[in-house]
Image 1 (cartoon, rainbow, N blue to C red):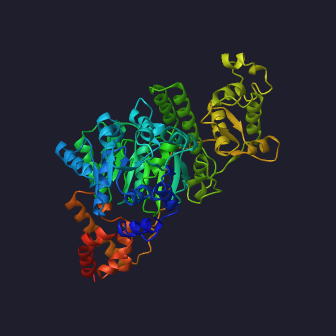
Image 2: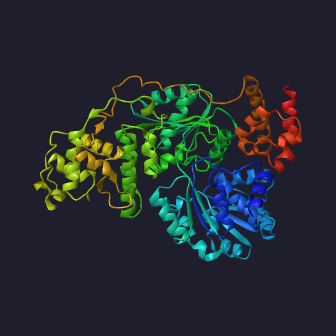
Image 3: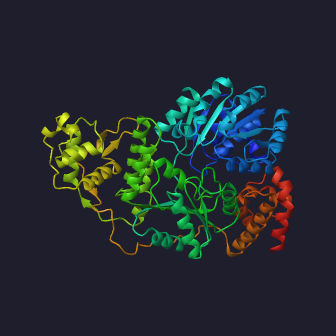
Length: 600
């Protein structure tokens, strides 16, 4: 079986070796065991179920949340010579019927379905009559994070292990903290699955956060450093999305809008332009992005605070999928926090879910207020260790910090006096000497720390606490009831063997924001090779438009760069290019070899 998976990897997908973690996940599924795979964006999640799907034979069902994602993956598989189908509401009924005939006849290896389509009695009954050998759930974090009020069918996927007994299930995601991972394993697998957490670090992404001042000016200053490249600008509301897109167009930037309030045809048209053309900036709400597999997105810019660390991580993950340098920049202001709190409270969900969402937001605010390396804090949230990255704004341009050791000890003392069971608001009330009903009822107005920080403003104390969390002195229990816990590092602060430094004012003076370093493209190509790469990209775009597919489906940028370096002159030399399998060798060798020969 090991030889078979390597043969499929080379002959079908054109790769000589597996990336870290892929082989182990594939072997687990080939052995009949279910698996949860948490892998960083761009690490090759799809191959983890596509290779065993071909090796096991029969039919593999792939559950995917978005029509556009399903259609792109099916197009990519067909170009690789794999019989794949999707049945969805965006296709004419006649096309869906034709697809089902091929599926029922056993001609199809992979069937892509949205959970709403899959979890109908009719579809499940029909699939039970077929030779289903594997089930893959893509974007599996949705099982935990999308509650019954939004897409209840994601929770219904828990029934799959009973409906298809003995069929291994693969759950794949790039975005899952420990709580989310436990939710997936419990709900989808009933606790019985192998878990593979292969890391969250994306070292090619430069991370940055700015205090929001004049967001349009800040956005324009950022885009001037990213002239002529593809990127995504995220806005919180539909109205702001339209406003930002219009503003960019007025300033000579090729920008398009995307949000759920637009007509479907307009959304699809804008997405198609973004996926097939270079240098387009998509201004969007979070309705855009999940599963968008455009490799050369050079930046993601957040005009507003995302909903959580998980949401932020997923959204910035759309940049730099080709492994080349990309930038993630976020604007952050107090109004953002207020709006996010309102959204959480307005959500139709349980008190427990709202509590968790508030705590997840607290963690993101801690990231924004971090006085030291942002990547260290981001990876710590997902359970990974890193000393410092050298590729975030705080590593590149360290800020002046103030000594907050005395204030930190005051906070920690109150947290310890109250039993490490209370959240930020309660601790701040005690520090400021505010005798709320909750404080009095608990007898905390009699504590030594009551009123010890009466001279400080509420937001200043909240900021200090968030920075203590960010710096690792305190831990916020997302899975519990939001109590602040003192860490080992916090104990050291209390006993005088550790110091705490903080940023005293997160709101900078009005004026021009400091320019970050302009990034130079990091390619190993000579000027002649870069010229050939440009020609190959133009050829790829023509072929993609002829077939009605995104350009990367023909070949990703990495494959074109490999062609430009190798300059193959024959079919055998073209077959050695990274990403060229048997079907693409047959279908594209002559046309690309011709272009390379014409280039001289």
